Image (cartoon, rainbow, N blue to C red):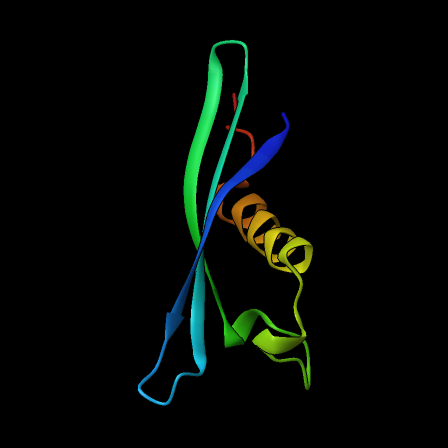
Length: 78
């Protein structure tokens, strides 16, 4: 299923620094669909990386990885 970004919303602290980025994602494959909002926070960034270092593509990739982890489940046992 192809997941597309529908919006990015930056959240700032009182000093004007980026606190987090809310990423809205959507995808569909026939009758299956997913809509998700993932918050990218400083905990999701690599060592020494800041929000100012990230492109839209970087932010989207981080959000999609978080979505995949959040929705991954083991198959039920028969």
